[in-house]
Amino acid sequence: MALKATVFKATVQISDMDRHYYEAHALTIARHPSETDERMMVRLLAFCLYADPRLTFTKGVSADDEPDLWQHSLTGEIERWIELGQPDERRLRQACGRAREVVIINYGGRASDLWWEQNGEALRRLRNLKVWALTSSEVRALADLAERNMTLNCTIDGGQVWIGTDQVTVAVTPSDRLG
Image (cartoon, rainbow, N blue to C red; front, side, top):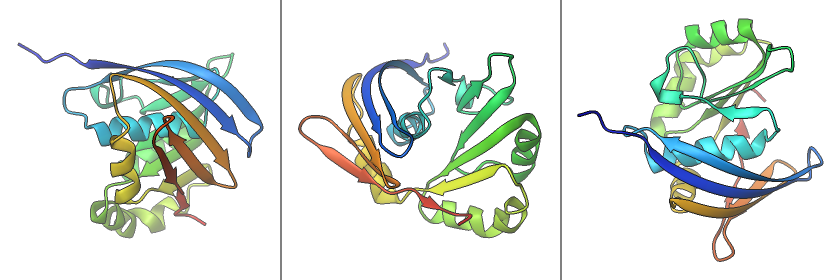
Protein backbone atom coordinates (compact mmCIF):
# COMPACT_ATOMS: atom_id res chain seq x y z
CA MET A 1 0.00 0.00 0.00
CA ALA A 2 1.40 3.39 -1.02
CA LEU A 3 2.00 5.94 1.68
CA LYS A 4 0.00 9.15 1.42
CA ALA A 5 1.15 12.70 1.86
CA THR A 6 0.84 14.28 5.30
CA VAL A 7 -1.12 17.51 5.25
CA PHE A 8 0.21 20.52 7.16
CA LYS A 9 -1.71 23.75 7.63
CA ALA A 10 0.12 27.03 8.06
CA THR A 11 -1.24 30.49 8.65
CA VAL A 12 1.57 32.89 7.85
CA GLN A 13 1.53 36.64 8.38
CA ILE A 14 4.14 38.05 5.99
CA SER A 15 5.64 41.51 6.41
CA ASP A 16 8.16 41.99 3.61
CA MET A 17 9.66 45.44 4.03
CA ASP A 18 11.97 44.89 1.03
CA ARG A 19 9.05 44.44 -1.40
CA HIS A 20 6.39 46.35 0.60
CA TYR A 21 4.25 43.20 0.73
CA TYR A 22 2.06 42.72 3.81
CA GLU A 23 -0.38 39.85 3.71
CA ALA A 24 -1.71 36.84 5.64
CA HIS A 25 -1.77 33.49 3.85
CA ALA A 26 -3.59 30.32 4.86
CA LEU A 27 -1.51 27.55 3.30
CA THR A 28 -2.06 23.84 2.91
CA ILE A 29 1.21 21.98 2.44
CA ALA A 30 1.24 18.34 1.41
CA ARG A 31 4.44 16.70 2.64
CA HIS A 32 5.38 13.71 0.50
CA PRO A 33 6.33 10.59 2.53
CA SER A 34 9.94 10.91 1.33
CA GLU A 35 10.13 14.61 2.22
CA THR A 36 11.72 15.74 5.49
CA ASP A 37 10.55 18.52 7.80
CA GLU A 38 13.66 20.43 6.70
CA ARG A 39 12.68 20.37 3.03
CA MET A 40 9.04 21.19 3.75
CA MET A 41 10.02 24.19 5.87
CA VAL A 42 12.44 25.41 3.18
CA ARG A 43 9.47 25.25 0.77
CA LEU A 44 7.49 27.36 3.24
CA LEU A 45 10.40 29.81 3.53
CA ALA A 46 10.57 30.04 -0.28
CA PHE A 47 6.88 30.90 -0.31
CA CYS A 48 7.47 33.66 2.25
CA LEU A 49 10.41 35.09 0.29
CA TYR A 50 8.41 35.33 -2.94
CA ALA A 51 4.85 35.56 -1.58
CA ASP A 52 2.26 36.51 -4.13
CA PRO A 53 -1.43 35.60 -4.53
CA ARG A 54 -0.52 33.57 -7.67
CA LEU A 55 2.45 31.70 -6.15
CA THR A 56 1.49 28.06 -5.55
CA PHE A 57 2.98 24.85 -4.25
CA THR A 58 3.18 22.10 -6.86
CA LYS A 59 3.39 18.34 -6.58
CA GLY A 60 7.10 18.91 -5.92
CA VAL A 61 9.00 15.65 -5.42
CA SER A 62 6.04 13.77 -6.94
CA ALA A 63 6.37 15.44 -10.36
CA ASP A 64 9.41 15.49 -12.64
CA ASP A 65 8.17 18.33 -14.85
CA GLU A 66 7.23 20.82 -12.13
CA PRO A 67 9.27 22.88 -9.66
CA ASP A 68 8.53 23.02 -5.93
CA LEU A 69 6.64 26.30 -6.33
CA TRP A 70 5.67 28.37 -9.29
CA GLN A 71 3.82 31.49 -10.24
CA HIS A 72 1.87 31.92 -13.46
CA SER A 73 0.77 35.15 -15.10
CA LEU A 74 -2.90 35.72 -15.83
CA THR A 75 -2.20 34.51 -19.37
CA GLY A 76 -0.67 31.25 -18.16
CA GLU A 77 3.01 32.04 -18.67
CA ILE A 78 5.41 30.91 -15.97
CA GLU A 79 6.63 34.04 -14.21
CA ARG A 80 8.62 32.35 -11.45
CA TRP A 81 9.95 28.79 -11.09
CA ILE A 82 11.33 27.89 -7.64
CA GLU A 83 13.41 24.75 -7.00
CA LEU A 84 14.94 23.49 -3.76
CA GLY A 85 18.14 21.63 -3.02
CA GLN A 86 20.61 20.69 -5.73
CA PRO A 87 18.68 20.38 -9.01
CA ASP A 88 20.27 19.10 -12.19
CA GLU A 89 21.97 21.80 -14.28
CA ARG A 90 20.23 20.60 -17.46
CA ARG A 91 16.83 20.86 -15.75
CA LEU A 92 17.68 24.42 -14.71
CA ARG A 93 18.63 25.39 -18.27
CA GLN A 94 15.25 24.09 -19.44
CA ALA A 95 13.46 25.92 -16.64
CA CYS A 96 15.24 29.17 -17.58
CA GLY A 97 13.87 28.73 -21.10
CA ARG A 98 10.33 28.25 -19.80
CA ALA A 99 10.11 30.84 -17.01
CA ARG A 100 10.78 34.56 -16.72
CA GLU A 101 12.70 33.96 -13.46
CA VAL A 102 14.15 30.78 -11.93
CA VAL A 103 15.09 30.65 -8.25
CA ILE A 104 17.07 27.96 -6.46
CA ILE A 105 17.02 27.71 -2.67
CA ASN A 106 20.19 25.70 -2.14
CA TYR A 107 20.62 23.89 1.16
CA GLY A 108 22.13 20.66 2.42
CA GLY A 109 25.44 21.51 4.06
CA ARG A 110 28.53 20.07 2.38
CA ALA A 111 26.43 18.46 -0.37
CA SER A 112 25.14 21.89 -1.43
CA ASP A 113 28.69 23.27 -1.49
CA LEU A 114 29.83 20.38 -3.71
CA TRP A 115 26.83 20.89 -5.99
CA TRP A 116 27.77 24.56 -6.36
CA GLU A 117 31.43 23.73 -7.06
CA GLN A 118 30.35 21.36 -9.83
CA ASN A 119 27.60 23.52 -11.36
CA GLY A 120 28.34 27.13 -10.42
CA GLU A 121 30.28 28.06 -13.54
CA ALA A 122 27.58 26.80 -15.90
CA LEU A 123 24.78 28.32 -13.80
CA ARG A 124 26.39 31.77 -13.83
CA ARG A 125 25.67 31.92 -17.57
CA LEU A 126 21.89 31.73 -17.04
CA ARG A 127 20.68 35.34 -16.97
CA ASN A 128 17.29 34.75 -15.35
CA LEU A 129 18.57 32.52 -12.52
CA LYS A 130 18.95 33.38 -8.83
CA VAL A 131 20.62 30.98 -6.40
CA TRP A 132 20.19 31.45 -2.65
CA ALA A 133 22.06 29.33 -0.09
CA LEU A 134 20.96 28.47 3.43
CA THR A 135 23.18 27.14 6.19
CA SER A 136 22.54 23.76 7.81
CA SER A 137 21.87 25.40 11.18
CA GLU A 138 19.24 27.69 9.65
CA VAL A 139 17.49 24.74 8.01
CA ARG A 140 17.54 22.69 11.24
CA ALA A 141 16.07 25.65 13.14
CA LEU A 142 13.31 25.99 10.52
CA ALA A 143 12.53 22.28 10.83
CA ASP A 144 12.07 22.72 14.58
CA LEU A 145 9.12 25.02 13.80
CA ALA A 146 7.26 22.30 11.87
CA GLU A 147 3.89 21.29 13.27
CA ARG A 148 0.76 19.92 11.64
CA ASN A 149 -1.00 23.25 12.37
CA MET A 150 1.28 26.28 12.39
CA THR A 151 0.68 29.96 13.01
CA LEU A 152 3.79 31.83 11.93
CA ASN A 153 4.95 35.39 11.51
CA CYS A 154 7.53 36.20 8.85
CA THR A 155 9.35 39.51 8.64
CA ILE A 156 11.76 40.28 5.82
CA ASP A 157 13.96 43.35 5.96
CA GLY A 158 17.26 44.07 4.25
CA GLY A 159 17.63 40.48 3.04
CA GLN A 160 17.27 39.12 6.59
CA VAL A 161 14.31 36.86 7.39
CA TRP A 162 12.76 36.28 10.80
CA ILE A 163 10.17 33.51 10.90
CA GLY A 164 8.56 31.93 13.90
CA THR A 165 5.81 31.63 16.44
CA ASP A 166 4.99 33.85 19.41
CA GLN A 167 7.51 31.81 21.44
CA VAL A 168 10.36 31.03 19.00
CA THR A 169 11.84 33.06 16.15
CA VAL A 170 14.39 31.79 13.65
CA ALA A 171 16.70 34.20 11.82
CA VAL A 172 17.63 33.23 8.27
CA THR A 173 19.98 35.11 5.97
CA PRO A 174 19.91 33.62 2.48
CA SER A 175 23.26 34.24 0.77
CA ASP A 176 23.41 34.99 -2.94
CA ARG A 177 25.57 32.34 -4.64
CA LEU A 178 25.74 34.44 -7.81
CA GLY A 179 26.52 37.75 -6.10
